[in-house]
Image 1: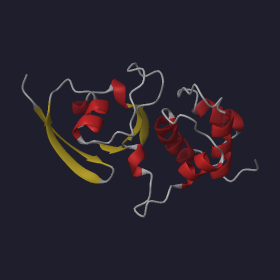
Image 2: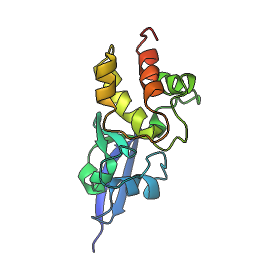
Image 3: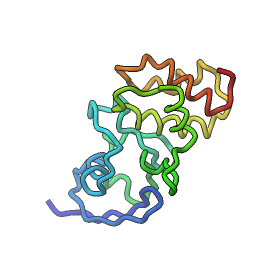
Image 4: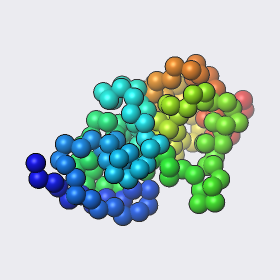
Length: 157
């Protein structure tokens, strides 16, 4: 099969690659760009581990072909940490509130909540729980994830 040239912005850097047309976006990020923070869980868009921001919107990377992202701007979990290595406020809140255990689902939660907190800077607990309802975690029970969002949105804990 002939390769297709794609051009996109990933974490602020212009990327051009010749790729197989059937390559999943998650595989492109992980195998072509070595951005392994985007995890592959269910490969059906159910678990949320592969969530990235595509043109500012949280999407499931496992449900997209890389060619569909041609011309787009993508942000992965690697984009969240500052140039000086400092965690961003949401990452720090996850650390402070013990919002992760094994960490497999964490990148998906962080990307989902990055978009959510930009759009909803003062969410209710119900809104937070609704926002994370598409991300699955087998370890935490979600309470500390909700607590982290409340911390980052400066709500009383």
